[in-house]
Amino acid sequence: MKNIAFILLILAAVCFANCAGDYEAEPRGTNDGKAPAPITNISVKNVNGGAIIKYTPSDDVDLLYVKAIFTNTRGEQQEVKSSMYVDSLVIEGLGDTQKREVKLYSVDRHENYSTPAIVTIEPLTLAVVQTQESLKVTESFGGFFLDFNNAARSALSFYIYKWVDEHNEYEIHDVYSSQQEEGRLTIKGLEHKLLKLAIFVRDKWENTSDTLYAEITPWKESLLDKTKFQLVKVMDDVSWDYHEGYH
Image (cartoon, rainbow, N blue to C red; front, side):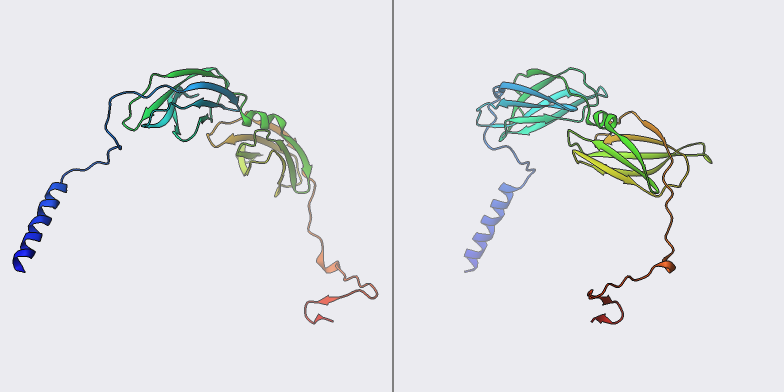
């Protein structure tokens, strides 16, 4: 019995030694060194701040993803990847409407790159610009309404600044976020006096619109004197009293 246990121990040690060493997860299959075929049937739909690129992926069995490489607004090289399981990729967040080339590569599991397919995109006007141009300020009680149109339904933030005489500069009052196609923001907490406002719109890529300047005088908002409140009782009306309950 001891001999059997000893033999099993030796076998386990041998197996462990064979499995030891540095291990890195390797892609399945052998690296044939061949680049996958480029994508085909490419079409471009320009959208606000970017483009949607559709294509037919290559039928290489080891295809892993499609990569797009382009230059962003800051002059930096940027890339977007799309899984082998889909037939499109989205470029977004560009801060201008300039034409630019996009190089599209098929990439296999061993990081072999195909020759690039090159397309040109021309982003449409940024959502922050379109939305800023639609802004409308209307006085209200203790503040104002800010109406907007966001046709692209982008996630946007509205920065509200007001002029502070004591500091001789505009200071932040509040920030509102919305992804609605159109809407109305209610800005409160402002005094009944002439106010200078500065409002701009920003997206999640920190693209920022021009600033809208406006002057308004919010309507005076005062608390009502609650000592003058009276309960109005109507004949045969059902009443509810907080202290006495329903009767």
